[in-house]
Figure 1 (tube, helix red, strand yellow):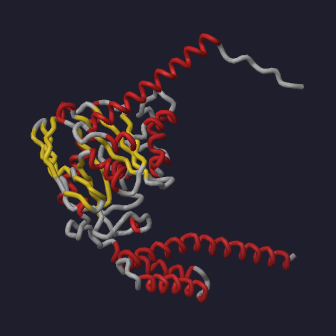
Figure 2 (cartoon, rainbow, N blue to C red; figure 1 turned 180 degrees about the vertical axis):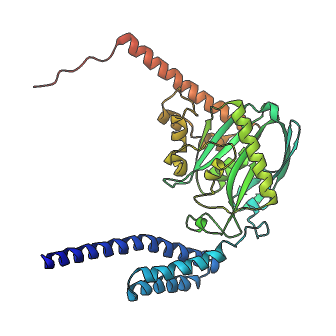
Figure 3 (spheres, one colour; figure 1 turned 30 degrees about the horizontal axis):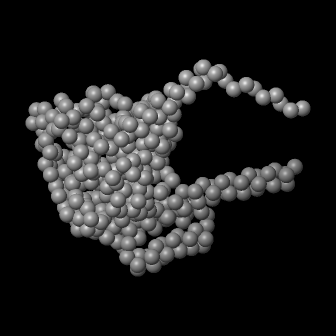
Length: 366
């Protein structure tokens, strides 16, 4: 009896020890890897010798856990070292004073006077290639009372779960303003998912001519697929969203912020605006299917099945052939024509079905 109880207690003790070890590993491994990335990017600046520092850190932690038991003791040391590192890391501040890539070198600003919004430094570059262009910034004034529509442009460059959404606000006779939340790249940087989780890039709210925003990605840079959707939202929602963007543009002009690949990216930064309502849907984060989520929530045209609407929304060929003058109007006329034809064909198919009835059922062979 006594020996049995000793064995049971020993078994329970080993089980608890295994559980504690497993839980410690679940926390220690990602913490170690995250610190390794921060050491490489933020402490060593991504230099080649930073790989040695990373190897030293990861190897040191591994030796610590292998050589020192019980496991909570090396875990306590790891926690203390991580805390000290975070004390330094959290004090890194974003800045407007960097050697910026020319495409994001100039911060926009918006002046508000009663009903008139004056957008300063609207980017409208003339491209010959992605790296060969004539910088051109414009000042555009629009009347808030003329806001009559908002469209979504969704860019994808081949990644399965990530796209880039851009909003285009339509002010009728005053024209359109394109707003894009992006990484403010430094010279020599490009998009890298891992780097975006560290303090390596700032955030920018760009104000663009939509021809610049689209052709930069369809004609001159890394090929993107581009889809254009008209959003079904009330005028009050359009106005509130626009004014939230304007406020954020002006805040960023005065005070820089870090870009973060998960918490402060092109989509989550939108949902952090004061009056945005977060769609609790994984397709908001893995936003290559953001259009599918918006369709399911009734924010896109419901007159066509989603897959048909998505197919018609692809505008690469239209955009690349569109004239410079009236670029946005040309896109929308062609897109509306496509959608109208698809609706007409759908109605004809329904009429034929109602006249002839469903196809006869075939007998199942014995």
